[in-house]
Image (cartoon, rainbow, N blue to C red; front, side, top):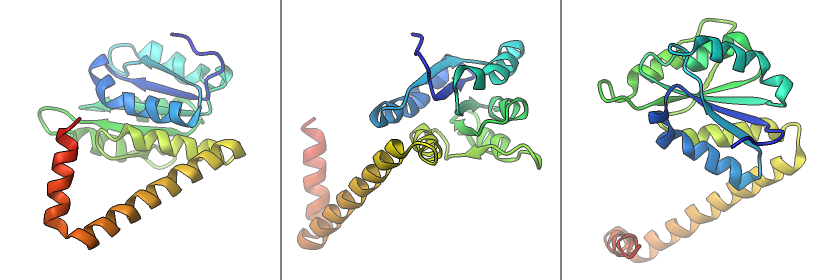
Length: 181
């Protein structure tokens, strides 16, 4: 589905990365940020990757989120082609549980930075993209602030409950609550 005037590009090396990467799309939707999402493989479609990175800014993209597993070259290669900020999402692999992806994305040479989030944590990539956009767009900055304030309230509420009922009862109630869904 083509999105008109997307601000964030979400790319991944394979459709098998989609299960992890959908969290970036979901959080951007929560913030009301337009995005496009597609498959761009650094190894299997290098011309497509090059074109995507070269033309992203012309299409209005301001931040790129790139998820990749294994050798995980997509985020770094994308960052080498564009001057837009790139956020890398290491995808969990079966052989090395994503450590290979994490190290590949993190170990960029000087001058070609890629912001890197935790393995399979595309949600944080989406939040980071929103924070980057929030520098320019006050309405996005306000949404991020409200989101973080909500997290703060949730933790305080949970801490109060644990302190009141004790951890054993809290865990029992939480387990019952989770199983009711």
